[in-house]
Length: 83
Length: 548
Image (tube, rainbow over all chains, first blue to last red; front, side, top):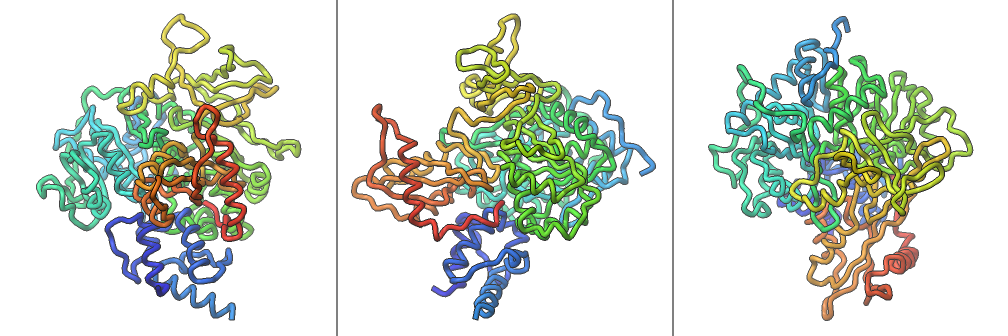
């Protein structure tokens, strides 16, 4: 499964707790209040295992988690800097 | 700054002083949120619209109104509006699964709900026989399961020309109901009266000298009792309550900037939020000149982190507040500066004004210095009871065991406490299976009941593993029904349909069978050992930083 599909599934199941709503890749996760402290932690754990990255503490900023698109760009950037 | 807030005086309903301040200091800012602010006059007008709409539909004293809203200034005007109608409000966690939210609204038999359309729409498949008389929709969208003529649009509510004080409402009427984890598997509602809340709010205003020059943070969600302090201590004194925006709450560095920018003078949160600020907030960037009081409650604050937090906010006084939702805050401890090196565990201090504390030894006598027992609390802060659960209420509301001269009910907190040489209290633990994780209260029985509801689960035990920064984390041990296989991803998804996210175990461990004691009961100690062993084998995949 591509990261986007896995991520969308994770958000629907874990962050939206299976509510019958859909998330578009550009939708703000933060403005909808979908990422609280517990959610952020589980999202990072998910990304670290699904995308094989490690999220440094200084990267835990809203811009990196704004939307599915933003998270993808963030993951790409982390992968690139790791070389 | 030239006008003074209304004097506190003898006002007996939770909204009376807000009315007084709407007259005394109408142009001062009462509430700020991510989108703007409301002055006292605006807050009064907005809450009046909600009240008038409810009253027009026959809702008032003896009724309940649900709230299913993300945290915002509009939540505060909604609460006040519900109170002004004479009804009690029931704030529901907007992040809870729809099944849980629907249970709360059904259980409280609310006659109206104020909520976001998308959150309200999701209730349909879980609402069973419950249909409110009206819903007030906040924001865009439709609620298909409600008749159109019973659906009001928040933004179109009309101003209340003349809103009469609701007849007959008195200080012993319910003001709000807060639902907490219930050991039998369903949340239970703690009913708080106007008098209960005012006892707490008056204590807070007096103890921390809250005045109209203060800006109080509101970090806790509105279904959580910490928020009662933030909102009402501010609104009763002409001060401002500033609501932490949901979008930056999980990000410590942004949160620190927000505290500075907002000029927060009184901060109140669970310890995990402060620990997170310490670790990732880059606090050295700011001096926080206005921050004068930091309050924390909800769980034990590890002293080693507390020392660091106190050093990071050198100008603030720190207070440890203690008490279950059922009593509001009942004891508190003002931390000395510096905190003596010999202090390893934090005191929970002395009993609050207008409250009474008894430590009852196991043999039924009153504990003295150096002795331990259960903390019993009497006084006006103690709840009216658990909603619709008279037996549960009677199990915790008992006659003061020290005399039978007159009716003197006290509340059994279930907390084990020792009396220190200076007469202050030390918290030792719980006498049941209620635990705290990230400041949230969870009954292990509620999580176990949710696991047992799954067809493949024969038996389940949930354990809280102590955690330095989070208080504790939950792990479950489960054994499958014969002929069933447990799919962990599917079981987790099943739990997420039923439980608040913080109550879903971080790890679920499958065993063929779970150990029992000689009497056939689940052996929690042995199960905990099994979980710890299973967890040690997978610990390298776990990560516990970035807390709260």
